[in-house]
Length: 144
Image 1 (cartoon, rainbow, N blue to C red):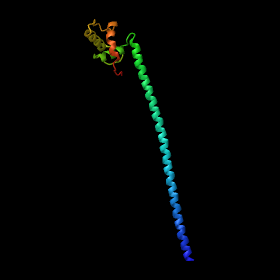
Image 2 (cartoon, rainbow, N blue to C red; image 1 turned 180 degrees about the horizontal axis):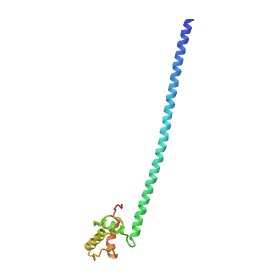
Image 3 (cartoon, helix red, strand yellow; image 1 turned 135 degrees about the vertical axis):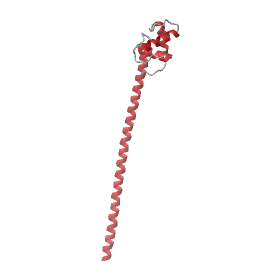
Image 4 (cartoon, rainbow, N blue to C red; image 1 turned 30 degrees about the vertical axis):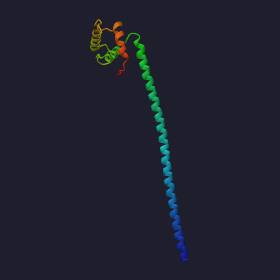
């Protein structure tokens, strides 16, 4: 009888230990599954952000192309002060800040360009001056 009780206790102890291991294993598996779910959510968010970044890049590219088209389109008519400054800078003359204002430094640069091209150095951009200067507008120059 004592032997049966001891065997029963030993079997009960092993059964309890094994069930505890199964519970711990299930808990680990649930934890791992939870982490996998989090990874999946983060991957989805990352993909969404990548798509958003690509869309913004395309928008910026379209805006840049639009700006170039506007500058080229405007160059056919009377030039703006900013276009004159850009063309002067690209031609190697220093008009000062490219701010769209015809200040002393811009006028001095116009005169220097006119003298170098055998034009009347009056500091005004007329047809002849712009005819020679506008080819420098199309060179790449960053506008701030």
